[in-house]
Image 1 (tube, rainbow, N blue to C red):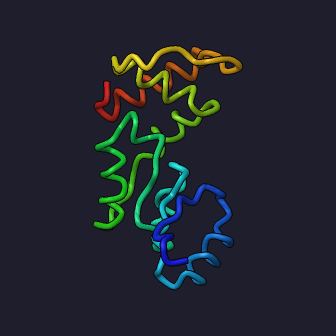
Image 2 (tube, rainbow, N blue to C red; image 1 turned 45 degrees about the vertical axis):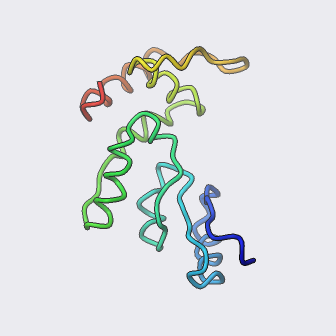
Image 3 (tube, rainbow, N blue to C red; image 1 turned 180 degrees about the vertical axis):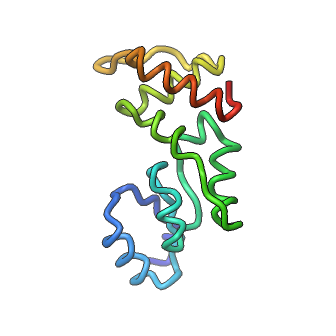
Length: 130
């Protein structure tokens, strides 16, 4: 289809992703839709990420991609903390910690567990976000 030039891939099914990329033969750019799969998807020829992580750590998310393209890797602890509970609970908690005031969660979502929130806070500090 000529007007489809990119795909956000969030299935996590790397066999399916590889098949799609092979069938597209370079005509479609593929972007990771899962922050914990940025590097694996880039290693398959992906072009970047459409990201939850980038709301909290835009520079660091950019750096994950850039470092991959430069041959370096990191950032899993922050990604794991941002997915320690159902999305968007952790990312909203993180953005509120950053002073972005994104507001409360809507039902049926509940506030982040204190233990997870503390881990998220410590990881964000270690990355220089807080």
